[in-house]
Length: 130
Image 1 (cartoon, helix red, strand yellow):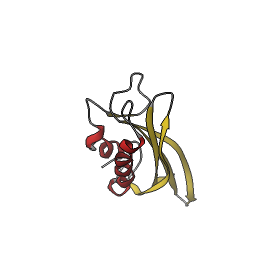
Image 2: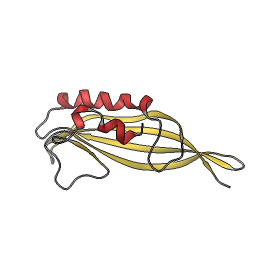
Image 3: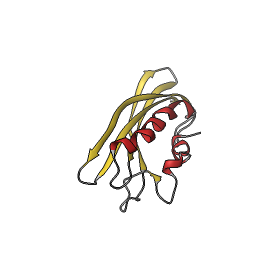
């Protein structure tokens, strides 16, 4: 299962109230939603005919309009637990694993009037260079 599929399976993020996006939507849904961003990809080890690489994927979750920090915490915890369910990622060869990276606990954004939080996943994979 890839990260997008795992996020879409969470009941809090299903339409029509929420959703999973690859960029911030122009008109955000009323309910909670997630934005998935690939933020880095680095070589961790160079082999003769391959590279071991690590891709960092940021999942930013936004709470419902006028939501509270407390209302976002259960969803934040659920997203943090997805690392063990991730077995693939779009655009990457078979992955070697997925670890939980640094997280941003629920915080309130006064501009959007929504709570938000961030979860980083570190996805390891091997790329053939020959």
